[in-house]
Image (cartoon, rainbow, N blue to C red; front, side, top):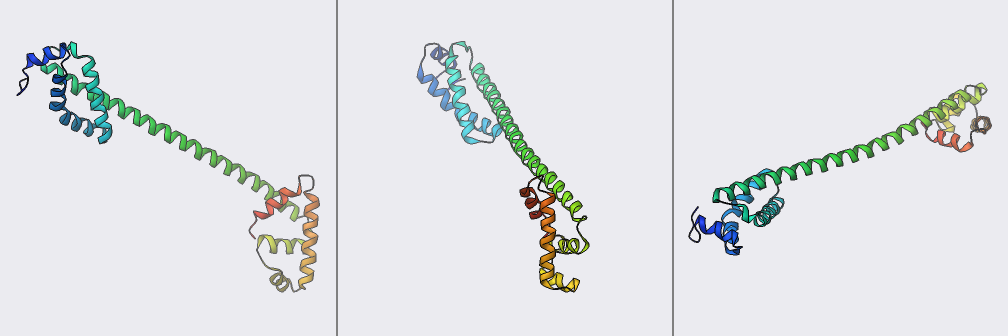
Amino acid sequence: MKSSQFTETQIIDGLKSNDSRVFDYLFNEYYTQLQYFAERLVSNREEAQDIVITVFRKFWSLKDNFQTANNIKAFLYITIRNQCLDYLRYRQRLNEVKREYETHLLSEEEKKQSDHLIIESDLINKIYKEVQKLPNRCREIFILTYFKGLKTKEIASVLQISESAVTTQRSLAIKHLKHAFSQEGYVFFCLALAGLDL
């Protein structure tokens, strides 16, 4: 390898004598092509530049080991390739960790939602069973109110009774259910009612 500045012998001798001019020459000679090579591998210019700089530092720390210019070029390309592969493996692992973390968060959220649905379904099922124990008129009004979503005036019209009768029967139904759920806590009954199709 010859240049306007150094012959191959001068380069090898310069490395052994710690001549920084030789390093500057090699850096200027190879940096652009090595940076392009690295960027093609990692698809990230800044990372490619960092890799090339790191490899040149490593090269300088091992400068006494080179016997020919071809050794130098081969070392630079092979080391940069290996550094790029290490970076890609590291980035892949980071992505895997990120995906695992996101999957974990999703799984936790899904589990919470599933648990809530199970609890809600169980409570609503209990309410349905208790509703079936209500007197006929109470049961009708409760179902029309909480399961069908009808207003007091609409229920009165459907059943052909007064609005006050609807209110009274609904209050009796709620009173019965409150008593039935007193063992488990009225708060759970309220939560279940909130989940019904009002």
